Image (tube, rainbow, N blue to C red; front, side, top):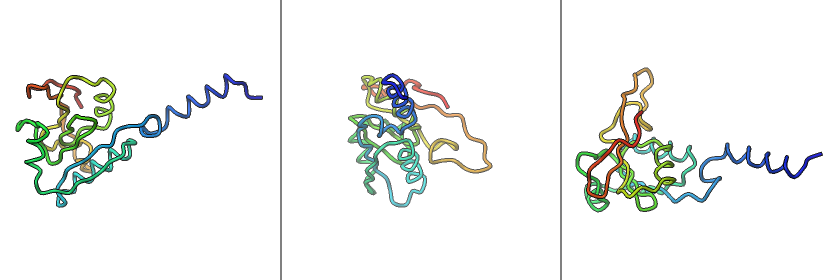
Length: 149
């Protein structure tokens, strides 16, 4: 016979394995990318697999979007996303985006500059992954290391 305590414990155990979107209402990740960039699509797939709802906007005006959102030149990569007022530049892992949304630092956003091999969307079978950092971009445009991978 199931007790109330057993039902609650079972529900909590099940919810821990659910994607982010099923556990809580996560904001939509709006991704600005070029139609010709395959790794951008792979990053969107990574975010979807992690439970994020995504909206993709195909554009050839990426430089304008990056300036609009405040992405510093040194932090640029191939695609730019916006989520709940923060930018997410490049191949940032979904876990880092979750942490950003949980901690809500006073910042512009996160960035993985350039396109490191092994970052989400940049996996290359048989090739050793690069070490890379996710940067937290402060309101003044400076950065600190948010996470190392």
